[in-house]
Image (cartoon, rainbow, N blue to C red; front, side):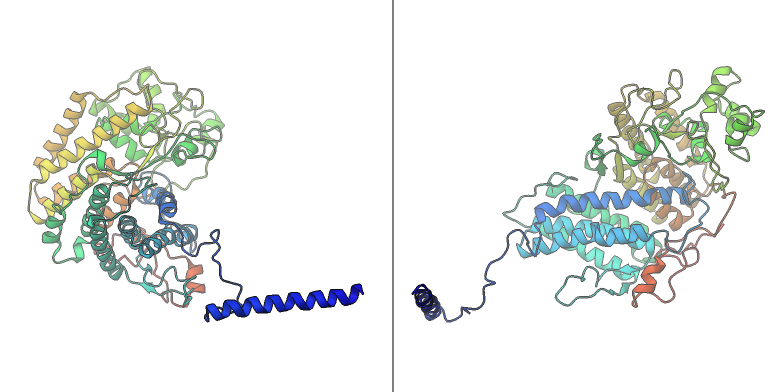
Length: 564
């Protein structure tokens, strides 16, 4: 009986289910009773939220840029990082891969999400940042995947994107900037939240987009027959450009330890296991000779004793070929003539802290990390260097915690670009513009340094004025516009401490400053670009064949093709 009852109950239940299904089907002919996949899982969206994606894209872009910053400053003899140009076939595989899986992809996802909801402010921000990041990729690698990038998850999957030439990508980036400004200008019900860079200010992002356009025009000006008129228009666009420190495009690091949000220079130089590389001797010594007020903000000495050359350990730690300036008679002669050092015990102790390396020094790394000059309070938020009363050994005093900045685009950079253009094309007053750029750099460094390290001593107005007066004298003595441009870009070289991108671009574009020392050892010729990873060339059939040679094949805008 139980068995029969169960069979009967099961039959009734089945009949009820079928009847209900048919009833639903009669109400809605489009429903398939066997299709149970009718819900969207809210925890697995196919398109991300622009609001959540944007801050991650900004963080990743800053990390990508900072990751390549040391290499470019090394190329320019500022620090010892690839300064002898011994680049391997896959030296930049990590950076390349990170861009296409990190900031580049993030920005494309913001664009996709913003388009899906017609969210114009987010769309405009992402388009402006994409133009900045891809034009920078062109400046670095020359040719990269652009038009077919980020299609690995598309309906028509493409995991072997073609490489677009740099000039084409620049053209597309100008279009992105046009679209960005239109979207940022248009009325929209959306407000921007989570914007780390500019706090959701559309006016700031319009200025940024306009400034990126100016940067690209300046970078590529030697291959643009309309550069003069286009640059003049770009200097006065609707919506303006970055013209004051409050408008600067900078990444701000925090003092947080876990997770570590501090400036990478700080963590490399100021922790117990410090391993910061060497600062170039010419860079620091030139600033000393020129009585540059930024010097104690840029660099921090660690040691005030002269290494004993009769001691094998000290001798083994001594920089080679005269780079240990305190024992270099020629350096002392120049320092005395400039009035920056005298034959005193105190000045000898001070000079002993100028511990760096010549450009291209490939000698072995000795146990010298406690002697090396390290980055100061600007931009790494380390320590100010008080010549009269400073502890020379790090990790013994409180410090400002690494809440530094990465100065990506600043108002003083813009004014140096403007001064260069005025000299190149004969409009405006380059002398006035260059002076403004120098003074802005001094103000930025001073304001930042005093705010980050309470022991900082503010620059004296008289010292800044004397430095500027010296520049103006040298400028007036220059016989031609080209010589004047060389002097201006020499000043830009020092103002751009912390940003190797602008140093490297300006040098490849002009060859200025022309007085940089040749590396004492060369593994190859000067790097005209970064090498595209050979793994990319091997795995992607659409990669250039053969891959460009980094010391032989310049990017599209480099007409100089500098060689030592």
